[in-house]
Amino acid sequence: MIRPMPTPRPMPTPRNARPQAQRATRPPLRDRQLGELVNIGPFTARRLQSIGLRTPADLEALGAVEAYRRLEAAWPEDTTIFTLYALQGALLDLRWDALPEGVKDALGSEVA
Image: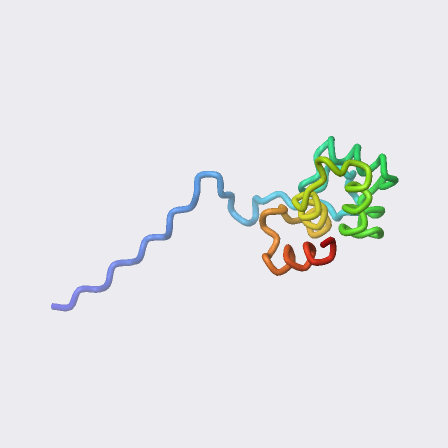
């Protein structure tokens, strides 16, 4: 007698994972404040505002590299390459540590 193959069980999901339909969708960049962008907290938002960037559209128009250069000129002691990654990630709506290595390498080359 041939037995039917058992039905495979679904892979367990992490406890903090939510189904796709339940994931919150973020509004477009233009509809948010600087401090609401991924990677940009109140501290960084204040610094961006102090260099003339008031909105996500301002950051997008200037670009992550130029914004980084301005921050570095104003605060050289604590503006690092991770600041640049955070700015680029904010524009892409992506955590800085999730940027592809190729993007990180290209950004590093631009500011070297």
